[in-house]
Image (cartoon, rainbow, N blue to C red; front, side):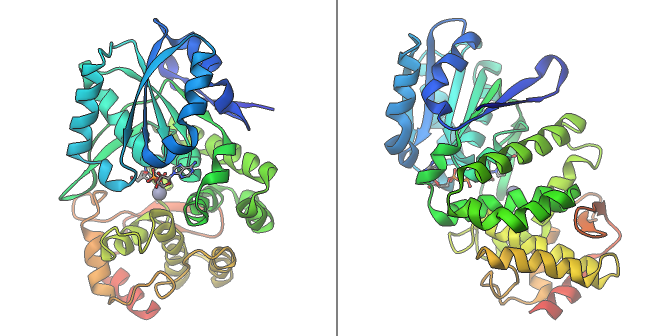
Length: 367
Ligand code: NAD
Ligand code: ZN
C-alpha cells in the first residue's frame, strides 16, 4: 500500500510517496518527470553500500541511465568543500536545468544536494529519497537547504523545493538504532506542536516503532509528513510564525548541541528531545502549562532512551553559558530570541516575552 501526500504550493506543488519497497519502483515514479532518460544520483558511503545498486537497478528497469557521486558520510560533507565538489561534478556530468538530480540519503545529503541544485545553472530540479527517519519525517519535505560554515550550522542556504519525495520505510532496517531514536524525537515533536492525539499514539506505539514494527513506522511517517506538508504550505518561508513552531525544542536543543560542539556525543534529534523537555518545563515554571504535562513528555522520551534532561544529555554547564549559545541562534530577531513554549501537550505557541536572563536562571535550576 502506498500513501500519496502533496505539499500544496500552487504551481510548485509536489507529491510525497510513502511505501514499503518503493525504492524498487523508483524508476517508474521518476521517469514521468524526466525530459531525457538520464539522471544523476548523489549519496554517501553508508547509503551507497546498502542501496545504490538497488536504486540503479530500479532506474535501469525504466531505461534511465545515470551516473553517481558517493560522498563521505557525515555532517562534514555539508560544507563549502562538499558543495564545490558536488556542483563541479554536476557541471562535469553535463547537468541541464530540466534534469532531476536524486538525493539518496539522510538530511546531510538532502540539504547539500538541494542547495547545490538551487544554484547549479541557476537552478535545476531534484528528487528527495530520504533514508533516515529524521530525513523521512522532517528534512526531505519543505525546501530548506543549506551547508554549514565555520560561523555556524545551516547559515548558507536557500529555499528550494524538491519535485518529488519518495520515502521507503524499508530503508530504516539498516539504520543504526541511535539514529532511529534521534529521528523519532522529531516524530514526537509533531504531537507536541498541535496534535495531542498523536502524542498519545506515540506513547502507546513509540517503543514498537523503534523495535521495528513496520505498520507503526509507516503510520508515524505518513502522519508526520502530513503535518509538515500542512505547515510548509501555510508558511513556506517561515514569515508568519507558523513554520517556526517546527522549532519546538530546537532553541534549547541548539544550546546543548553548541555546548557539545556539534559532536557525536549528542545527535541533533537527541538534543531536540532534551530541548522539548526543557521547553515544557520552562513553560510549567512560568505557569503556562501543567507540571503533569511536562512530566508526561519527559517520561515518554526517557522510556525510549532519549535524553530528557541536562544530565541525561551529558551537559553540566551553567545556565548563563547555555543561554549565551541561545543568543547566537540565527532565529534571534531584533535582539530577542523567540521561544516555542506551550500551554500543554499539543498547544505550542511562539513568544519573545522571556529574556535570556530568565532562561539562564531556569537552566541553572535544572542542573
Ligand atoms: P545523516 O544524513 O548524517 O545520516 C545519519 C547517518 O546515517 C549517516 O552516517 C548516514 O550515512 C547514515 N545512513 C543514512 N541512511 C541510512 C540507512 N538507511 N542505513 C544505514 N545508514 C544510513 O543525518 P540525518 O540525521 O539524516 O540528517 C541530519 C541533517 O539534516 C543535519 O545536517 C540537519 O541540519 C539537517 N536537517 C535539515 C532539515 C531541513 O528542513 N532541511 C531539518 C532537520 C534537519
Ligand atoms: Zn530538528
